Structures are given as structure tokens and as C-alpha cells.
Image (cartoon, rainbow, N blue to C red; front, side, top):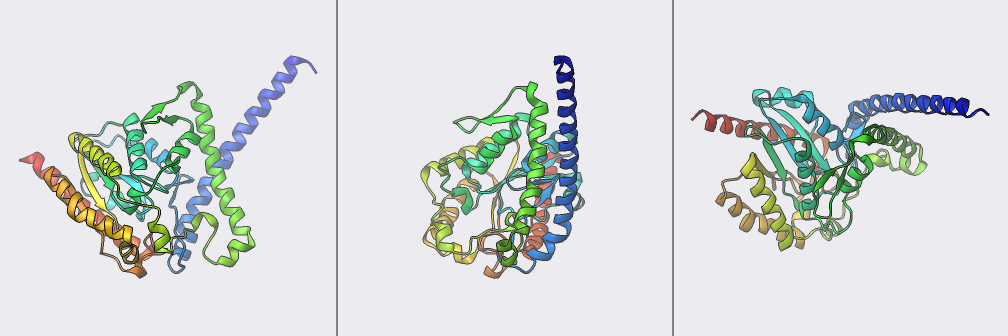
Length: 346
């Protein structure tokens, strides 16, 4: 075959493949949004072990959704102020950007930077990712989750790190900083994100068709968590001096740049009563709160606000409880917005 003709066919094939992937990714967005609106609510409301990962733009808000959140944050150009939430899947918001904007005061927007398997290491990485493209302002509110999950023993690559690596646009340094990879490969990075969207739908479809998953009656694999055994969950986290130092350093840095609010996330009573849970609860009372008060950093404490039956799997709130939690959080953040505006007007 003539080399020029061969090259021509190759270019056509590659172009058609790119178009096919783009169309499949758009279909993935539609499917996952429909899944969120219908399948998610129907199952999570009643079935223990079911937790929705909140799809937006075809991506999990938890695990890789911060990819689209960063794009949204840098393109919205909201001068009034933003609320940027950094944490784990325990930030179990009923996340709908439209609803959040309607409920938040003074045209503030909410952005969720959360990752499954969250930890102090994850918080720092996501904070550094945001800083790579966005500079915090004196009207922004950065809500940082400090939960038992923050003290997870993250000794290997976190989900946040592996997702950023798979995304391709950035890489994480050994010190948990974030570096921008060469912009020449941006089209390839966009292709990878589209493939991730397609992968999400594929995983949902395969798990739904699996006899094992269907028999479980608690939704496809992407919708399940298994944190029923509090003792086993507690083994995965511990309050240590090195983690505390990292958290305090991050909070002080944020406090010097913007309005930081620490959230002590809801914790199941049974988990709080384990040995590790008790140590975590004592740490918040005897060390974390005094530290925050000393430096004038605001905090919201939702521990002890929810009963064991409010948790869908021992760690995450149920659908109904997450609605109550979201409304309460929005109310409390509105008070923080009022305080910020009040201080500016003095």
C-alpha cells in the first residue's frame, strides 16, 4: 500500500476513534446523571450498605470528581466568593451545584474536592491541586474536613494520587506538592478524562449484570461500601503526632490566606466508642479545639449529632440523613458568610 495512502487512512481512523470516544463520553455523562437522579435515591434510602458517589459530568465526585470541580472553579469567575470543601467521602453532601447556589448567601458557589479513602495526605494534595490553578481570596471559605478518616493510615498511594496520575495533567511530588505536566499533551489528558467517564458507566453496567451484585440487592459495585464492622474500620486510623503536625501546618497556612473553617464530620456512635474512636474524640476536645480557638479559626462540630441508624454503612450518612446534614451545613456556612461580610463592613 502507498505510504501516503496508508498515512491518510491512519489519520482518518484516529479521527473517527477520537469522535467515537467523545460521543461515548457524552453518553456516559447522560447515563450517570440519570443514575444519580433516579437509581441513586431509590436504593440509598432504604438499603444498608448503599452509598452513592454523586456523579457530576460523568465522574464520581468522590474519587475523580475533583477533576471537573477544578475546571468549574477556574471557569466560573465568581467575584462574590466561593466555598471550597476539601475532604473525603464522609462529606456526604446532597451535592447539587444548582441547589447549593440557591441556598447559599450572597451568590456563593460550592465546590467539592473530596476523595475516597481520604486522609491528612489527601487533604494536603487536594489543597495543592487547587492552588496550582486558583488563588484563594479574602472572600473565599475553605472548609477542611477533620474526621476520623483524616487520620487514616495512608502509607501507600492514595486514591487522590492515583486519580491525578491517571488524569495525566498533573503529577504529585514525594512531598505531596502538585506539578503541572507539559501542556503539549493536553489533548491526551482530555482523552483520558473521557475514557474515565466511559469506564464509570462500564463498571456500573458490569456490576449490575453480575448475578452476585444483583443478589446483594444493594446496588451495583460502584454504589457499595462495607464499613459495618466498627472495630475493623477503627484499625485503619490512628491519631499520631506526625499527622497532627501536618494538619495544623495546613490549617495555619490557609488561615493566613483566606477564611478557613474546620468541620468535625459526623461519626457513627459505635465507631466513636472503639479505642481508636475514643482517642480521636479526646484529641478533638483536648487538643484540636483549643488549637483552633488559640488561632481564631472557626469550626463546625457535627459529631454526636446523628444516631447509629442515620448511617448507611457505619461510616457514611444515609440518604435522608445526608439531606438534613446538607441543610444544616448550608445554614452554618451562611452564618460564616455573614461574619465575613460583617467584618469587611466594620
